[in-house]
Length: 278
Image (cartoon, rainbow, N blue to C red; front, side, top):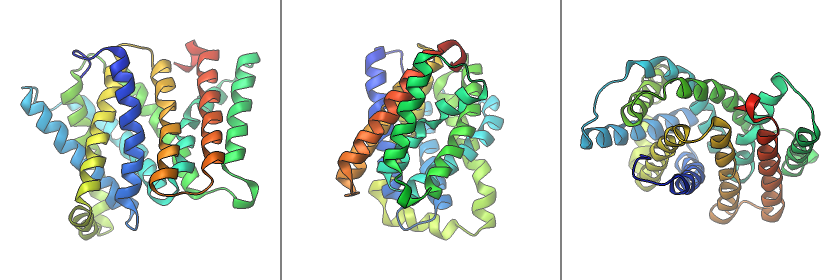
């Protein structure tokens, strides 16, 4: 991916599939366990990536993807748990919290960073009114972001590798790491139940999941990681709107306004100190 598409085509594709992925994960996992849902979503995506790799004559194992797979297994598991247990229109906005986390590792305040943090904080307060308390699903999304930072850094260091076999190998590694808890907790019957009962959601989740990661690799080859995260941030707004419309999650106007504040704050923070945040 990326060689035959222009930059803006990849950016638009990234926004569409990332927003769709969050909706699909919620639809796939409703009423089921997050661990089984993660295994289905990422196992199916790995299978699709291998089919694509075979079809393009690139089907070979990339050993460098095995250990990053452990990092991503943690991140993806928490990400899926958040989307399964929490409202899409709430948790999606907090996927952008990775950027403020990175900032606070070594904060260097200026007018732009203050504005960015203020907008992000305002969005968080609007999205999570005090009377509702702090949702565990939001915490899982925040923890997923912590692990995602490590995964993205490893992706950047592997840019010389062919994207499709690397993605297929990485997702297979994620599944291999997931086999331990899935087996230990006896989740195989639930995995089979999800596949049997929700074939449509399975296909949507697996396709958007696979393509979403390929768009990350394609963008990292063309623009700085800072720009990639800025692009991805806007998917939170799309997912919030979709959660309100598709799943009839209440408080639409408030949630969309909060998602916009979170996203704008994230983008401003990214570009206030791009050398450090990238």
